[in-house]
Length: 431
Ligand code: ADP
Ligand code: MG
Image 1 (tube, rainbow, N blue to C red):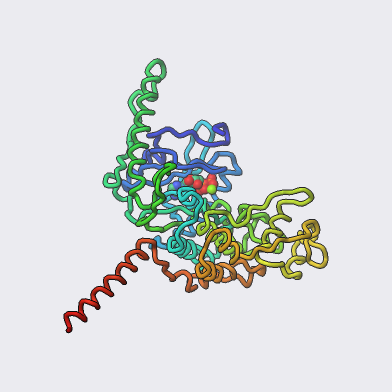
Image 2: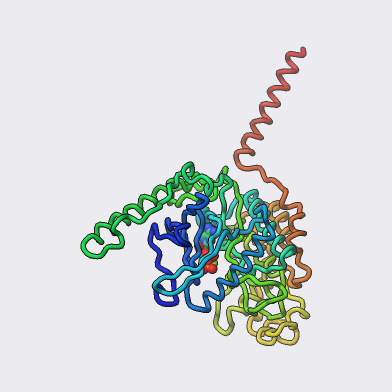
């Protein structure tokens, strides 16, 4: 991991780009990189610093990601298209080699964490709608304006962000930047232990300070406790799409196998060619997961069939049989389907349509399920070209329905009672 060609080891208060950025704490990591919260001494804002592994293939991937992120930033000067913004990039030399670094705007927790925080029970539909609007705004921008396919849309790659812009006012948001290395840190000998201790203490304090503010920062979620009431009331649900490591221009595709398994579109499994509409499929899977707390498709290898075959079977059990023309039309169709368009190795399907699934398993009311299915179903069209675009989806009436929250239902019924009382009173006065 932390070896030649691999990750760059970072310590709290390390500086980057000639002292401009100071590392504060680790935010996360991926296959190719570690991501740190850093303080930008030039703008006095907090940023996310993504430090790529140093081997040539990782550097190549980072250059591609920087190219995509630059196009995204250039096309969106007002930064309101719900896509993460690249602020800067540079090279950093360390013991494991030279690392490409990306400086990104600092965002909050992922939707995956939000789903976990809500104990996999699904979010209120009003919140799901707010999140869907943001994701669709991002996708519409990427697809229509830039010609970019994300290819890895999923809850993990959508991050919440605070509308109270904590990056602008670190003091008010409770985050005091760590600006210098503790003295003597670079010296050898006996002093290292005490300095190491101080360094750790300091880092712990910084983390505690930040953690204590997380709940109030809007885009951040408090660490869940087992008996915590999962109240998300008042949290403004805004988010941005991140992780453009796998994104491509629709006319310059380089990978045949794209997307994370559970969010993968049928044309990718069948290898029938793909376009923007693969993101729409992943979007629909994500919307379902937000509303129910569970992934829609979780295919598994079984006795006598592969994960791909199980995946296709699950799709058909939920969405009905795949039209023969589509089933047999892909580069890999022969691996899965016979010439009649039936799966070769999974013969009996147990149909359980989306509407019934929502009502029976997830206890949706009939009305909620009906409206949600009307929104989702067209996105699960097996024919990619028939799926609505993000632009079209943004006009769907479902996005503007407003369910009453539990509190509103309560107060609405008490308002009703007061009204009755008032009219009685008026009648009496009138007499
Ligand atoms: P990789 O391409 O290596 O998968 P990602 O871009 O997905 O890297 O980032 C890895 C993790 O770092 C994310 O899952 C998230 O937790 C965190 N992260 C990434 N970008 C940001 C950001 N702009 N603000 C806050 N956290 C971030
Ligand atoms: Mg990632």
